[in-house]
Length: 326
Image (tube, helix red, strand yellow):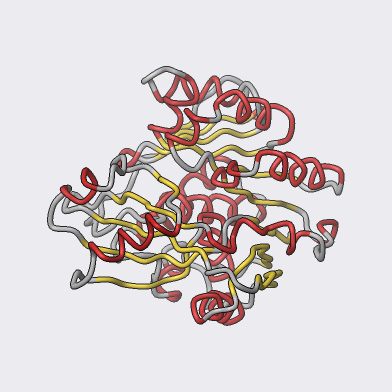
C-alpha cells in the first residue's frame, strides 16, 4: 500500500462560536480567510473570547488530512513542530492514537501553535493563527527520510517561509515522491501568487483549491475556467464548489472536466471541510481509483466533517461514508 506523509503547521484548533461578525471587524480579520497573529494579537483575542463557547481539537490543514486518512486505513506520516507544553502533548497523543508515524520536533520555550477558528452564525470560519513553535519545521525535517514514502501532502499555509517550502518540494521530488498541494486560503494565494504559480508548475502533481482560492489564482470568477488554468500546470487539478460538489481535470482525461455533485447535508461548521475532502480524494487516488471516484470520495468525507463542530468526526461514521470495513 502506498504511504503518504503530510507536512504542515502543527496546530491545535481552538473553535470559538460567535453570535455575530462584530469581533471579526474589531480584530480586522477578513471573513473566511486566515490571518497570522503575534503573541500580542493572540492575547487580545483570548481576552475578547472569555466566556464564549470554546472547543479544542487537533488542527493544521495537512494534519487534518493525514488524521482523516489514517482513520480511512491509509499508512500515514506527519512532520511538524510543537512546543514543550500541554497543547503540544495533546497534539502528539492524538497522532499516536491514530497510528500516524509522527515526526514532531519539540521546541523549548515556544508555545504550540493554535488556529483560532471563529465560527459565525452562517457556519463560515475565520482563522486567527498563532504559529508559535510551528515555524521551526526545519528541526523536524532533518530527521525524516522522505524516500520511505510514496507521496507528500503539503499545505499552502507554509508560505510563511518561502525558501523552506521550496526546499521541501524539491527534496520530495528528488526522493521520487508525488506531491499534492492545497492552496489553503484565498488571501494567501493573492499575497504569494507568482511563487504559487511557480511551485505548482515545477513540483506539484495534484492541486486542490476551493472556489475563492481558484478565483484568486486565475483572476477569473468561473470555476471551470480557473480549473483549466490550474490543470494546465499540473497532472491533476481539483476545484471544490461547496454544496455543488467538485470539479476535476487530469492529464489522463485530456480536456474533459469531470463534475461530481455535492451531497445534501446540514451544515454545522465548515472547519476542515477542504482538508477532509483532500483526505477522501487522496485515499481514492492511492487505492488506484479513477478521477470521478476520487472526487466522490472527497465529497463524502467532507460531507461528514461539516456536520460536526471542528474535526472530531466519529471514525466509524467516517469509514462507513465510503463503505469501508472497520
